[in-house]
Image 1: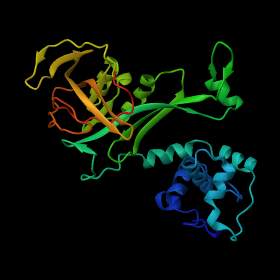
Image 2: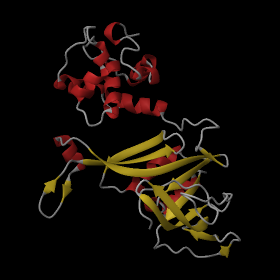
Image 3: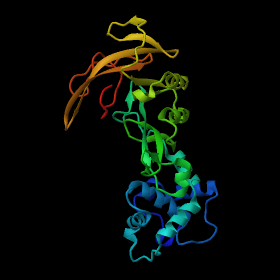
Image 4: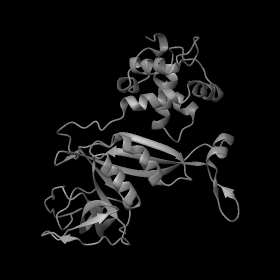
Length: 306
């Protein structure tokens, strides 16, 4: 157990969420415990990196000041930006990966509002692009954005995540070069899908191969289809939806209008959604974010309709 200036609790609320014992066990499991006493013990570097995720715009020295701001007068060692960078390099990525695997999950209790629909855990998969530091190593692996005039901007990574909608907790995440599109990274999230989930997929992630892969995990899905897709009508159902097939996957197609209300006003668009035929219909709702006919749950989106 660490003592002195870095005793448990001295690094603030982070040690309540990630106890020192947990950080120590992760480091021991990865063989990353320091071999000699340093100004920046490996455990402390773990908390530095966790704090850096909370204060993303700040550099490591600024994050360090925030992390140790309450320890003034207790003899905190003066550290330079170079020392912080070296400590991060010594630690490596393995302990953070192991800590993520230990903590990730839906964090949803049976009564957590917005987490469940007909007994299914409501999740969503989506992706984004993030800038990373413009270093020689990043440029060599990731490249940079090119146009007809020059190469500009920062190197970037593509991130895809599986998130529990009710708690916003991350269940799984994968990332890598932007040369591969979102669907390629989403296949890395299939390991975390299972029976008892319903996964919300936007139109860029509703290709036939991906829907078949999601079905193969046992999870259900609610996928938004692009306006250009015209699924064959195999049989009309009384509520106005119809049965169809997408790439060998039997689906129920729901065409509905969804109104999204924000502080900027309201917007109504026509959406085409695909679900497994076995999913029960949800009662039609009125008011903001309502849809007709009856449909499974959908999330509000800031993107314009297809």
